[in-house]
Length: 306
Length: 250
Image (cartoon, rainbow over all chains, first blue to last red; front, side, top):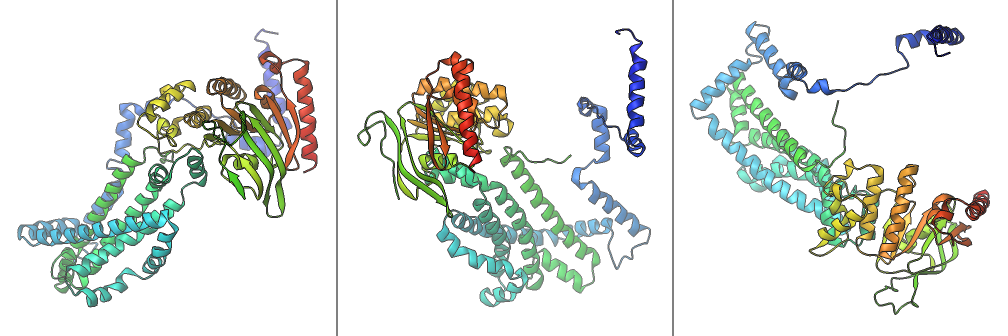
């Protein structure tokens, strides 16, 4: 029985089971076998694989935008896109260099960044403070939630005329608009995150004898951190939106002013330059949040993508 | 609604010596269903009581009342102030490292030192600085056990803490609980639907039925007798029959 003659017996048994099954099913099986084999993925750490992976996506998430940029340049230089419709990336770059050399870009950029920074600082400070108070205490929820929900419903841009009537066309109205854009989303996300902390964990901490302060510091605030970072992402995006609105409608300096000037003189390349600056600001903001997430949320057992 | 928290072993004045838990005429309703109905239970200091019953019989409700997480609709519950709960899931804070999870309810400068000592007892000293996401199910539950024991409780309430573990890990946890029990000398109430677990650990087994303690079985067996033998099998079949009756009436 232990001799190799057993093999044909096994084979015939296999043939028997195949004839016994439905012919369609056996066909499907032969195309995708019922068995799977797993082996080591150590080869992925090898240098050849890493070079290949780098070639497939040499600049990470920015590979696709870069490809678009190259295609755009090719389309412009071959005459597919009319120059009065869209400036080519090279033109945008050279107008940036030109404006910078003439001392026209630097001050505008600086004033825009100052406005965005001041507005963000104010909006985040108020939003985080109010969001924390509202999240932790029912009285805070009563005090702030209604107002913020209403502010969230009213479009940011609709408030601009009101801001100008109240605060004039000076810096206050611009900074306040940006602060509003940043404060509302951070408040809403932080509030929801604190209220979303697992009840079971709170019960555990209370049962273990943790006091009110311990509960806030070790449980509610760290538990709300992922939500806070989501809010921060929105806050940064909306603050740029507020910046654009404030600068394009009533300003005599800043990137938005530069764009509206360019519109008046039909300088398409400078319009694009302004848009590119806003895009870079947005990307920079996103990178900051990514770094924060990596540093602060190492404990999180979530899906990292495949 | 009377829920006193007296009877602390330190002063020992509120209760006659040697009583850790005393609950009388306890009723708890959810809607029009009386989950606990005029229940009475008493646990002596450093006694190990196992509360046995099918799921949905009110075991966890009773444990939550004794833990102070819920209040009775009528009746009184008196438990030590120094008490701890080990839940069904480990309930670790994912954003705190293992030792910080253990010190969640602990005050004072040497909190970490005490936490390390207890982690040593449950055999997890090496995982002191690990994130909870890297722990196995058994390790997580041992951290939960360490968290319960770290404040030196007079009463430990265990709510099916080993239900999700495999047989071997569960047996190891039983050994651990037995050892910790003698070292810390705390009264323990374990809620479970596992008859073998009850026999392995209990000084006294209570079977719940109709929102009350249906029957009581003192377990005067030594370690070997709990594993095999006539007395064990007899007790086991009695308990299974009683739980079967309790289940049938649901």
